[in-house]
Amino acid sequence: MSVPKQKFGGNWTVEKLERVRKYLVAYSTIMSKQRFNGKPVRYAYIDAFAGTGYNTSKISEEATSTLFSELVVGEAVQFMDGSARIALKIEPRFTKYIFIEKSPKRVAELKKLKEEFPSLTNDITIEQSDANTYLDKLCKTKVWTNNRAVVFLDPFGMQVMWRTMESIANTEAIDLWILFPLGVAVNRMLPRHANISAAWQRRLDDFFGATDWREAFYRTSSHADLFGDAEIRTEKIADFNAISRYFVARLKTIFPGVAPNPLPLCNSANTPLYLLCFAAANPRGAKLAVKIAQHVLKP
Image 1 (cartoon, rainbow, N blue to C red):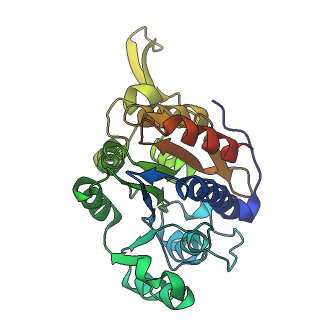
Image 2 (image 1 turned 180 degrees about the vertical axis):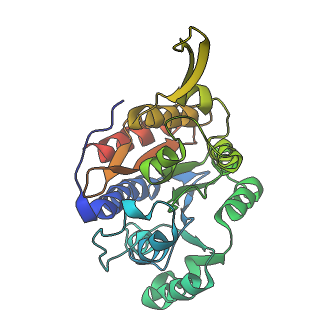
């Protein structure tokens, strides 16, 4: 798997949302025709970092406070529909919408969606909560036998924990779209000479749900110095492609279906910011879900 240099400029986030929209249309069309025990299947759209419902808030508010702001500052910010509003416009409609947002200010904005979409009001749930905490509880307590869902994890950085993805996979009922912070966070946390702080190492451990990223991304070798003595060096060997392959391989350890062609999203300097990835938790439906996602993710 390679990461092609796709130049989206300020429109990389538009590209992301359009790919997810296409999948939601295909998903809802299929699910609207399904029956469980003679009854229509219930299927939800779950947005774990819902923002305000528009595209602007997460980038404009958070980019200025992140260590990696130079990757995104200066990108064009457009006032357009975010993932929550896009999902509410999908036809056939979902039977349930769950929008999770930690910020009280953004939650207040999200609540306006009920007024804007009055026919869907009773089926819109807005939760002010930490995404990991809420999703973990929902996945473990909900009876998923006759329920299905699409979860969209669209954090700005590395807020998603591996345990959350495990909980999603264990439902055997959820399709997952996740924005992997390839360049905006992960690659920047992997310095050339492996001088990674203990705090950053723990964060990478929690994000990947494993510790073998150290061996995957770094190589330790012995070299003779000027005096013939052995010198031990640890150097970074991972590039964007290697990091991408590692994350997709990690997803495959818990999901029965994973799209092998995640889509890199680049800034105007052609630097990969994120990787849009797809995984299916339902063993019976994984093959079809991945086939659709592969098509949606094509460059």
